[in-house]
Length: 408
Image (cartoon, rainbow, N blue to C red):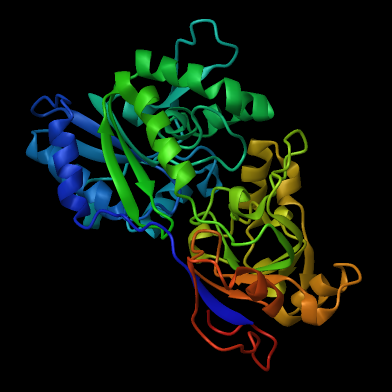
């Protein structure tokens, strides 16, 4: 295969800490001296999240507040207080680094629902604080598409509402995500103590492109703008049809579903329409990231995985996340191969009557990093004349003698 580079827009923020401080101070948020401020942080592998949280803590302290961190991540971390704290720490959000305690609990307070069909909950520690600041990345969702998808609005609900709120929304399946998150968030904003949202948007290189501090009354309006920016700046694979996609790693720090459904063109939800592109016959996933803590949600989107990945699966954590979401296909077990090479051979053998020399194959590190990829000669022939494609290396074998992928 041949290593190539795809060039995408690379606008990004260099001084993350200064931008966070500037946004908070210019937002108009009021922090009373001596007030306790909960800072809600989620379970995604957001670029520079530890730096953003640390800068937020320092800025709030400078304004006279007393900040602490609360994990806002629904059923992740095995739906336990200890597990959710460990998820934050795996992203560098530790008490020592950010300079504030982490108060991790699964206890919630029920808020008035004012007639909507589901109950409304909020993390008890956050609710009892004098105010709460939410930090989250804004991006297109892996389950559905609507006016608000993955971002601050969703964090108000599935994140701050902990496991109990996740169950209350997900029991309605996709309908709950599309139609109940926004009215539920409005209840949290009305009856909770949300002071500010800090929205983060990344470029195609997993770098922080936008940091925006937003007051509660502007959350819906501003999130829509940031979501549109993300939608038009997402990375992608350079072709619309593949025989095999080889993925070096999947994980919760890469996507909420382990493998970004917007990249692979598969939703894995029976009631949802499959995207038109790309069309991929077989997907192979080699490994599970350490930051996933054994949560292999999304493995059901692939046809083949390796024993290396299988041996890292924490089935309790995986199944709790899968069952809470109600999207069971995403947790189904693919065929398990001994090695990466065997998984690839299985994938090629089941693609139909194709000549191996003409096989359309791409290898990616993960669905978050798509700048440098490996392509087969048939794919290279299609993309070589595109302006954003640069050939980096001569053709080479991507497998070691032991049948494992070479270093990416």
